[in-house]
Length: 515
Image (cartoon, rainbow, N blue to C red):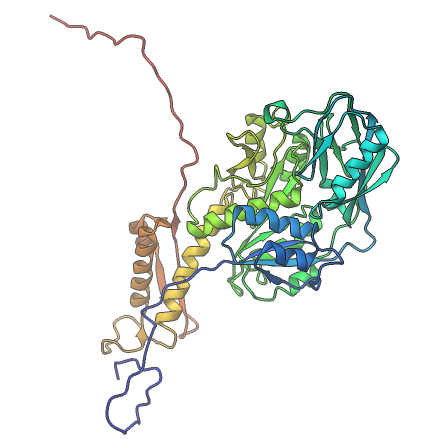
């Protein structure tokens, strides 16, 4: 019997016309690539901690996690950069024994002229009308009222005479990443502090700007064991996970890594990648970056004076990467804007030499785009830097490598599992009828070569001739029911450097004529 019926029984005798429909040669792989945002919820949120939940709109995020919560704010920034992804949220509770970060704004001198106070807290702008006759206490009261009137603020504001005390709405170290300042856009952006008004901010522990304050004193980091276990084997291709401490990175690396139980491991074959962000000084970032070494996590560096918090930067980075890599996993992410993020002021940004060094220390890098405010991705570097022996290794240096490899493997898996789900295995040279449900090493090799040609046409791989020459398909020497394959794809590369030697001339040399 050479026609490979799967359902129609060979002993059926009732006439006449019977049709079995077979889709094994028709389907193509479909990538949905869901996104998972991980962050803390407020007690007001309806969601159950540590259980992933689908989110369709920002209003959903507010209802489930609490308006102004860390996770709701992450969804706000994600949606600014990617409104088409299938989104999930993994809410985590406050760390046990954690402490909320605090800070303050003190009005030390009253305004003497009317104007508008432009105040920024965690990147959110508040404009406060100033009459020019307010006392310091009244001015502080106006600031407190303006903050309290914005429910998406990640802080609460309590008035004490001329001081506005700010407290993060949740406990933990993540609150320490909330910065606040005035007149971020300066006079060029139409912002100026009203004449006479002087504001003093609680001291920043990392920023070098005299105009910025920072919440401090937050302690504790959530644990992820239960939340990660509850992900089960559902696919979450892109994860925004803003906690960049060692324990958190290890937990998520174990889930997404290349071990037997990891999502990149041979048993699970789910793949995926994690996006985070880290604020610190240049020297500290160099040390931090070189201490990490995982291919499945990419951490975006942040100057100390980036106004947006790290959890929002991680979400914005994930949003743009997820959108671009789903469309084409081989294209570099450079120049993609981190939409909704407010970068460091011009005089407090890293220079190109520092950015280049951070890239070589396992950190993704950004710089301000032409609008003068919004950061854009420069290089989508992963944390991977060394092999098992501690030697330099660039094999997993870039996110595009992971994304392209996952796409190629999934294409191959879809072709094999659709076309050969219940086939028999025979040696090359075995004679059988055309269409029989039998596969040989040569047939399998031809299938892989044909699939590679499609991937090459779609811009995922290159050098089909080299692939064919190095591809090995053979029957296992001890298990007669197993095919072993050495699959050597050469992934597509990216144009990341265009180096030019401008060897100019002031005049054209005149050729010497010999008689």
